[in-house]
Structure formats: structure tokens, C-alpha cells
Length: 340
Length: 78
Image (cartoon, rainbow over all chains, first blue to last red; front, side, top):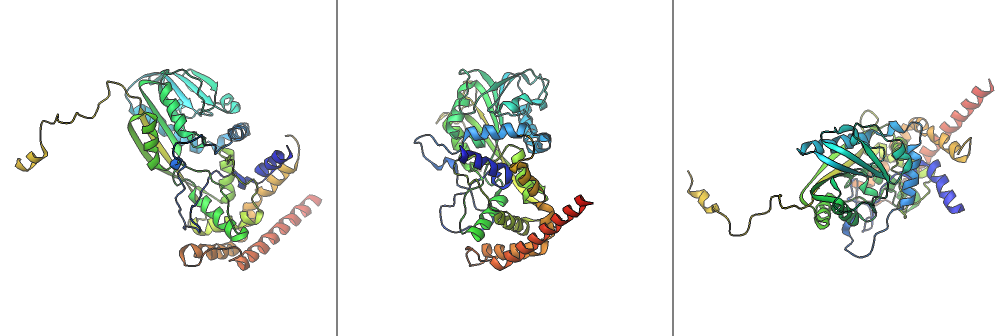
């Protein structure tokens, strides 16, 4: 018990340990300013992955939700939520029942109108976030549920959305399969998750600082899915007509402490099992100097990159366009040379 | 968690970090350049490669801390 208390003390007292990111570089040495993070889905089949402590994530989200000034940390979720809502609007349909997975304080529903979505269901692991959800004109049900164990029947929802919640899921293929299950045929899943090169500046600064000060480094940023793996994951889960695109959001901060405090306030503290709960003050000082020197801009601020992956997948249905049968072509490419 | 405890006190101390760090911008830049040079050059980064520069940074930072602490004390005693 004292071990857990100790860890909590260090987590709250030293916000440095709250950054969420992991880079396991398989070779020795450092690759410079932007090493690619190892994709989690590199593991083939096999048993369940257990990378994150879901219980800790719930406690962190509860803590972040009941902060007095929790609104000021909402900027990233607001931005991504509005972009996901944009994608919902792009689909010219009305969805009778929609589900928001890991929605927290609900940043998507407020941008949608009753003509697009008639009823909304919001799930999250954190009760405090659900209690403080933002108002929306669509009637909403709140369900306290873990994203990996959805308590819904098959073929329930016409639309499933998820914004910035999938990167803390242990078994992403399994979660995508469950989403596929709860969708009705011809239902659509629109998701946004952080991936790829998110927070690479923070990751590198901490890595270099720890190597120079302590002789080795441990993961502080959680592992992210690479965009190339996302298509495979969605395909394996049974979605078709996939669309995956990337958006880079760069936020400028005064310094490394503000980056880490904001990540903590967003509820994005690290909860991987292999996280180190202590960051020496020397390392924080060194990382601040390195971050500023390597990535700082002329006006003295430092950028933090959030790479957001947006994905759209449809549950198969007969009405959807299929690839044409072999041999059904009516014109030949060879005819192109005969025109004109 | 109500009242003053070690977590809230530590967090208060960490809140001063940005100001104090800003006072040591030069030393920080020197240290940062030393470490950044290893990412482009042939030399690989190992422990205490830039120890000298870091010592300078740490001394500057510690002075800034004691200066701010003594400021606080004089203000509260008035």
C-alpha cells in the first residue's frame, strides 16, 4: 500500500512523470530528433496485451475532471471533437442512435444537431467526467463502461464516434471488433486518436536528458499506433470502405513544465505499467534546457506536436459498393491508345 | 485531500520552475547545444558528457532559487 501511496505522491508532486508516451528503440543509441515510436500492433495475434493500467487511467481522469479549472485544459479535445463532428456532418444521413466511446465530458455532441443524431449514448470509465459533461441539445444517456468491454448488444448503434480515447486501450484490435459488433449493418465508425509522432519533442528531450544525467532512459510517453497499422487494424476488425487521414496540431507552450502540467490536466498522464514514477529534478532541468534548445522557436515558446489520426470505417451491408467481378469489364485500357 | 500536505507543497514549488528557469537562459542554451550536438555529430551521448555545462546550469538555478526564497522571507517579515 505504501508503494502505491509513494507512487501517487510522486505522480502528483512531480508533474514530469505525467507525460504520456513511450518509445522503445530496439537498437542501441538514439536516432536524433524524431525517432519513430514502435507500433503497438507489431505484436502478432497471441494473448491479450496489457500495457496500460485501466484503473489508474480512471483515477487520473476522475482527478482531472474534478479540478477547479479543468475547462482550460479542454482545448485539444474541443478541437478534435469539432473535427470529428465535421466528419459526421459530411455523411448525409440521420442517425437514430449514436454512441460516443471514451467521450469523457462529451466534446462531440455539442457540435451536432438533432437532425443528424437523434439520440446519443455517452460512455467513459470516469464517473466524474460523465457528471460534468458539457450540455448538448441531443438527449444523452450516460453509461459508465470501459472501452474494452462495451455492455451493448450487437447491432444496436447506427453511428459510433470516439475522440482521443483509443490510445489508452490495451487490446485495440479487440476493442475495434467490439465496436464493429455493436454497429448495425451499414453503420459507420468515426474515430480520432493520437498516434504516430505525437509529443516526439517531449519524448526526445526526456530521453536525451535522462541519458546524459542518469546513464539510461525509461519510457515516459505511451506507445502510439502508427498510421500505417491503422488500416490493417480496421480491416481485421471487419470494417470496409476505410478512410484514414492525419492531422498535425502543434501547440506552443512557454516551457516544458507547462506541457506536462497541461497533459496532466487533460487526464493524459501516463498509466502504462512500465512507467517510472520518479523523475529527478536534475533530469527535469536538463530536459527543459534541451527542449528549449532543440525545438524552441524565436519567440521563446516551445512547440508540442499532436498527430491526430482520423479513421472512418463502415460495417458491411449489401447496399455498399463492391469491387466489380473479374471479367465484367466492358472497355479495355488498350482502347485508350485508339482514341483521338 | 484537504489542507497543506507534501503533495500540494511540492506542486507549489514546481510552479516556480518556469520563472527560475528563465533566469538561467544562457546556461540552459549552452547545455542544450552541448547535448544537441551529439544528435547530429558522430559522438554518441553518454552519461555526464556535458557535466560541466550542467553544473553551471545547476549553480545558476540554485542561486535563483535561494534568491527567490530570501525574497519571500523578506516580504513576509515586513
